[in-house]
Length: 263
Length: 157
Image (cartoon, chains in turn purple, green):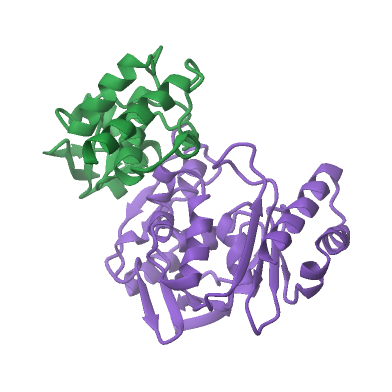
């Protein structure tokens, strides 16, 4: 399939990008989610605004114990270790399992998070991490807790006049445990169920269950899950009242595996 | 819109609709038909080319985003030492039958060899998951890549 006609704009700075957004342009970063939707005509924007050339859009900087990841940083850069420390190891492990390397070379953490496909890997992991999404709107930057960013299927806390500029994360101590599990029959395909559990020394463990065809389930205190993965995974998934038994089984199993790996 | 890009080392300026993807631009405007199109939504890997030095799906980069890019297609690898070794190894191992997936396979194979010099069979198979071949069952392709990796490791030690 070929996309329906659209016009293309490449804003050189953030005010220009916000102005294009206000005019109704569809923002695009690496285009690895929007691209297929354009080709399949699932997305029919009249105008596309290519964010990749905005200053500071890609790249990682440290401010004390906070790591700021530009929204346009590619999955491949994260896979290759652009984020330092234990946090970087965890993110690299997640990034390596996103789609395929040629897709990771273009696809970005911010583009994927803002697109909020329910099966997307960052939507299944970032809500478990301590940090904020940095939105930029006409009035300046706004900080949205990562656990509150994804609201539903392709739906986020970003307002219509805001762009996702960066992800800010707290550095993690070396002894942090992390478990991540996703169901794919072949590497790189869309996940049928994804779960992660983060156990940071001195803090309550957190967990996320995603790829649910709904907003991810964010568990702010996953102590019970770590204590008894099988029983607590079953209890949590039962609360979701998933229609398909196979989907509930995959969700339970993903949560259990992630919890066991984080112990 | 007018697009200026570098293809296989040569600057090119083409007129294209913004919705035209890079693969159609290469094939239709520049007559570089070595880049093949399978699924046109990023799954099959047949259209993989090198964009700004790294493999990318040419069906998922639309014309505007190509402006200023440097692209290398299967026609552009010439006497590149890794590609020469891969071509020979693909031939020796019967790593292709119809050849439709081969341009994308070779671009990804070269990336594996250069980026992951210690890759074992499991890693090669994982890295190839984004390139579909319907003829070979992958055995020949995996063997061909492992052969090049082994000979380079031998040469380095």
